[in-house]
Length: 68
Image (cartoon, rainbow, N blue to C red; front, side, top):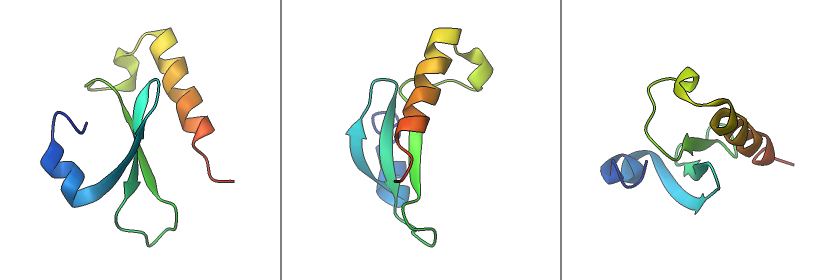
């Protein structure tokens, strides 16, 4: 996401780190504390476009970025 549209990153979020299957971005608008964006590492139109392995890795990333 940050390489494809860096201007969107400046508007919406603060890059935190690159994960195995995605980028973790802190959403600037924090009306919900801890709100973040977990963006898949490559451009896909729909999650159904991912292979089973890619989809499972992405959802593992989502699960591992939950707030404690």
